[in-house]
Amino acid sequence: MHSEHCADILYSGQTAICVTDDPGAMGLAAQERLRTFTKNRHAEGKRLVFWLMAAPSAFTWYEAFVRDCHIDRVFAQIVSQSEFFQFDDYPIGRTDPRFPVTFRHLLETQVLDKLGNARPPAEQIHMLELTGGDGDSDVLRNYESQLFARAQDNDTVIIQVKGIGMDGHWGFHGRETPLDAPAGYITVPINRQNRMQQTIDWPEFFPTPESVPDSAATATVSLFLKADHILDLVPQASKRFSVLAAYGTNDPIPGVPASAIKTHGSSWAFCTRDAAESLITYRRTGALSESDLTAIDEIWGNDQVSREWARSVLADAGILVADYNT
Image (tube, rainbow, N blue to C red):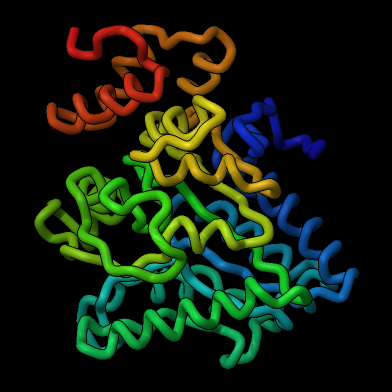
């Protein structure tokens, strides 16, 4: 991929990594890739499915995607004929006063409601309608069956836009769920590091870790990998540990679910230089500087448990070869 927005290109496993100077350039580079891929597949007669994360990591890409829908008639027509699915969500229904914290609400207000004439008909928009009640298991089974059907259809192409959690989760598939868990939708607990991320991403909704819901529904990595094309977006400096852990080596790391993307033959990552700084240092020199280690520690504030956990992940992966307790 040749793009004016990519200041540097790195490789990890089967994934190419475009490093940009800032979040705006990251969003433009990702949309440039998605727009080209989408148009090419449409020209081949394929039906398109957009499988989207709902997170601040995607905000600049959302803007670029919506902008293209308003200025590019061909792209807008393709989008209007496409289907939309989401990654994950909290078990909170639409009548619950907490509904604004859901990823349904974010995708609807930040993407779908802004598409204008490019917005597909309601039957092509598939939201993960959870309530926290007994019917949620049926909702999850139906949702995964719909995605399985699209993945198995040779005339349908699934384009996934993902991010990486601060602790390396993919969707809400965290380290507590094995990488080889069966493809499908599951309910998982929200772990310590993930709670911290939610308070950083959504302080207006989650002022404390305790205010974050205890569980969420998510696709598993095995299901995520069934997408035909995957774009990974990571703009935040607070993700420098997870970018390093995910892309520092060529092989997946069991405790870092997002690292499994490197096994996918049609995958791109888009990171800012702030997010990729430690990865760049490591991939070019084979070592981390003291400033890298300090910056990784500082991501977790005064949480010594998380600091030690992060260093142990890097040590186990061979990225941090020194005694991480010294």
